[in-house]
Image (cartoon, rainbow, N blue to C red; front, side, top):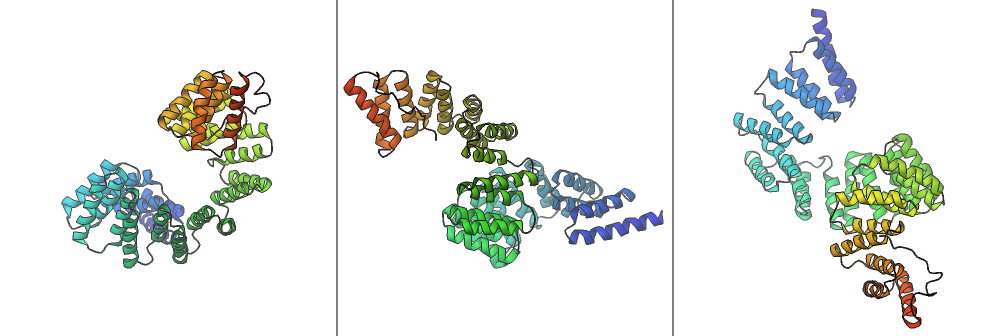
Length: 447
């Protein structure tokens, strides 16, 4: 038995070294082996919970922390870790119960207030988050994590200047606090102050070194700032640290924007090689195929993406438009029906559904959906144009003119709308439809 206990303690020592090296999976295996020998040491369970948290295996970590708490029911550190863990799992009521237990045991334990800021922020209860912030400051006035956590609440409410001020307080207290400059950058980005955002992303890289996520964020900002060369350099810098599906995807997006279709296809294939389930990779390959005129190949990629996207409304909207472009109106119609079910008050979803009905020659239903789109968004020139075109096709020229004049008042320089207007004027001068619309491009106007 003594040899087994010695072996267990040796494994715990190795786990500590492995943890410090960032080799968390190996550290967890060593701790689990030690626990299998001696399951009654609460500290080993606690340390295993911390290691699993580092691995983002939150469900298993919660179970391990709970086992440690069974052995030491009033251990404040374990209660605190369980509160944080439950928040990460989205189990907010349980998280609050653990923090409340700490408050009863020790009202001056500041982390029980500090961590509740995030719990309440996640719940959308920002008044309670602010209350926790002030209670925490009564115990410890200058806590960098409190300022960091309340900044998240302020950011979520769109109070970007206040969030930036709190994050600056974090840096005053802890100049190397991780991710703080990233969040300052995000707040400036949300405000539209892109140069300031770029400055703080670079400051984060100065502090954190070769951080891939920050490089990718800064690269995407460079894309928005129309600096494709800077963006590409950052994405390639991230790839130099190892294959990364996000970096490949971003480079593919750049190549697609620049109409370098062969290069784009290669990057998106690299995305799938790194992560075969990567969202939107097949959709982007479909775009490449459509640009090359490869409709059948595009359809294959779109079919795969459809099976994976579930109820992601943004992805459904994108896929629907690509399906229309690929002349797959029936599949597009099914996608837009799903989208309208998810977002019944979304005018763009209604309008897209209408276009899919028009493509299917189901004019009455298309007209109905287009009118519903206009009720939700009356100043939509594309929907007005499509209604005009639909009424032309059904022979209702008077109604067509009414919708078209509204579209022209909103978009007087749009050549597609102007072309239909000229045809309608000629119809008014020379009689009914007759031959006035021969050779006219009957194209519905998408979003």
